[in-house]
Image 1 (cartoon, rainbow, N blue to C red):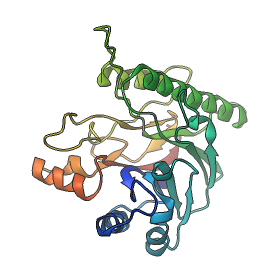
Image 2: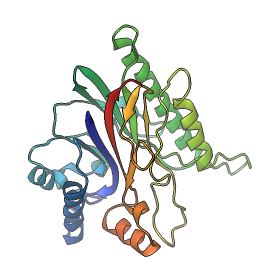
Image 3: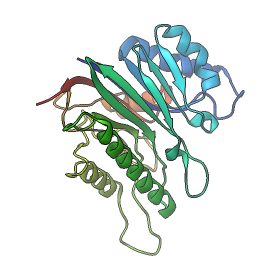
Image 4: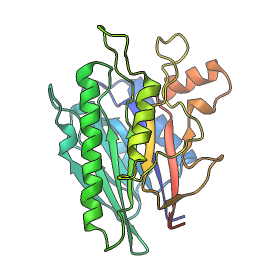
Length: 282
C-alpha cells in the first residue's frame, strides 16, 4: 500500500449555526471521531460539511499525529482534511462559484510517494434536481476535467497525471416540470461514469463494495441513492476490497432497516468511502 484515504459527508458535522452547541451535537462529534480513530485507519481523512470551530478540539486531541486543514466556506459546509504524512493542500475556489450564489470550494491534496505524485481533488457538489443545480454540477465536472488537463501538462514527458476525483458528487438527476424527459439519478450517475471514462479523461469511476451511499432511513421520501464516488486515472492501482476498488463503510453494511436507521441517526445519512492506493502501472 502506498497510502489510504477516507472521504465522508458527515451531515452538519457540528451544529448548523456557529455557537449553537448542545450535548447531542458534542456527543455526535465525539462519536464520529472515535469511530474514525477506532475502526477506520487511513493516512488521509476528508470530512465534508464540517464546522471548523466546533471540531477543532476533538480532531487535534484524538489525532495528535495528523495535520488538519479546513476550507474557508459557508460555516457548516467546509471540507476538513487530516493527514498523517506530508501533503500539499490547495483550496480550489473555482468550485465555489455558482450561478446564484457562493458554493463550497474544492480541496486539492497532493501527495508524493516514492517520487511519484498523486493529486486528489475532493468535492462536495451542488445538490437538488432543478435545472440551475444540474447546470452547476455539469460546470463543476468540467472544471475538474480542466484541472486534469493542466496536471497532465505538468506531468513528466509521455506520462499522464495520477489524478483522483472523490467525494459527494450529488448526482441526483434533473426534474423538468414541463417535460417527461427527466434525467433520473441513475441516468446522471451513468453520464458521470461515461464522462470520466472517456478517451480524453481515462479515469474511470471505480467500483464500490456497495452501490448506494446515501439514505435518510426508513420512512424517508428519498430512496437509498448512489451519490458518492471515486474516479481515478486508469494507471492508478487500488487494493481490492470485496471485489471492488472502494470500500463503503457505515449503514449499507447493516443487516436490518432498524440497524441502518440507528447508524444514520448516530453518524450520518452518508456512508463513508475508504480506498487504498497501491501505486501505478499494470
